[in-house]
Amino acid sequence: MKTFYLREIAHARAGDKGDTSNIGLIAYRPEFYPVIVEQISVDKVRAHFGALVKGPVTRYLMPNVDAVNFVLEQSLGGGVTRSLSLDPHGKSYSALILTMPVSVSDEQAQALLQQGRTPLA
Image (cartoon, rainbow, N blue to C red):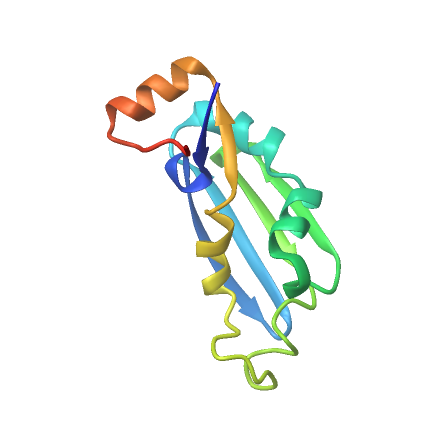
């Protein structure tokens, strides 16, 4: 097993509506979807985002498209027009979630290394 940043096996899209952020994680390849499902849980996302998220975190599985969607309520300081934060948009959260660590099998790690992906130290 080797550990990589989530960004090495998935990409993300995010958006916002009011004080709620929506983050979609999409596996680059179908074999990475189970890694995401097993390792990127509601509790881990909540811990990773820390005090940024004050409300519920909900996870939706989308196996037909190898994706997972997270809804983070009360996560934007009241919303774009009400927050004093520099950038309270949900899109910035897609970059943050991709910094989460994931462990992959030796076979998956070898394929990632051959693609020039860098594991965590």
